[in-house]
Length: 445
Image 1 (tube, one colour):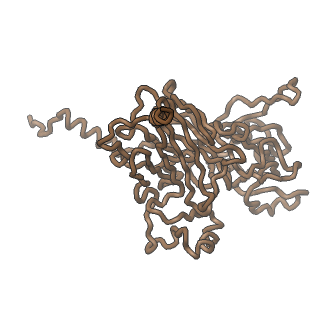
Image 2 (spheres, one colour):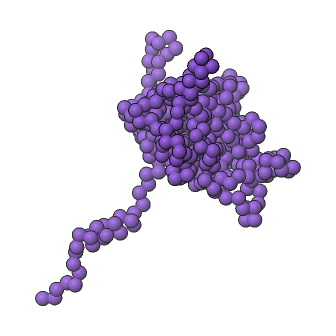
């Protein structure tokens, strides 16, 4: 009998399993640990049948806590299952009409005959006879936490050549959501319980003939292959300012990528801003060591007897982007004792149940909810007052955030060994309030 020369040791088995699993790709990028159930749900309601199709209402609900869609807004696309056309739309429009020549006998030509239409929202100020409820916001969709009333967008669509019964009509397939770039992956349409609608007087309920649901989830890996923001740190107890890591969002290289950035004092700044990339919203950032469009600076400002204070400043280095309805999410263990935020709105997110270490901040409407393009006005800032908890310490970088997100994107943090540290000769910081009290008492004496 021939004896095998291979022996299956435990280490060999583990190695073999690892090699087999490494052949497969598992995508978990769309999972957001701070918002695990966050998504945009698209509800497609067939409201009534027509002679060759139906009239439907498509509604997008943003159930994400802190991720929103800013200008120039969303673009919704899909592929028709059969030979459907769009006879008309209210509250939105197809970007292309396509070839509708075979419908020349129609009194009114179709709105779009494209097999893979792309739909955009209408702009504010659209005539009322072209509007429906929750339409016409220029594609801007607020996050659910920040502005629930504006986290919904809708339009009406009249579809032809689609079938006129529940058994003959087909849902659109290959749904895509651009905002305006990639990032969202949408599920196939699923038939759900028909939506119900309450009349204005609250005395009558109507029902859709059929309802499909499509769920779209976001992946930062798909949306932004490179980071879009970084974090710098400083403190009152150390003169060191820890800048964003070098090349956080890219590196300056005018040899291989000319025009990738522009100096703030360049005489050609205006020409660069209005250059070829303006029409495509291509970012034009100020030349920095980090090359990020957004920098978040966290400064440990003051220490009191029972409280401590932080100043947060957000700076825009992108000359072609105004960030409307921006938001910031920060993680720090002392958010469970947050006492006061001076000029931002805020809300605790509690992603881990009873553990409150995550807070969301955004601007006050008409005051600082718009982060202007790079320049003298391209920053917003606020101060945050914390009440000290038992774990409070200035040592080992405890006072700095664990993680920062801007508009939902994870920002690049400096390495912990570079955080501003307590001076060796001052292991304990004397509270500012105590020093001030002693000084006043000496003056009185």
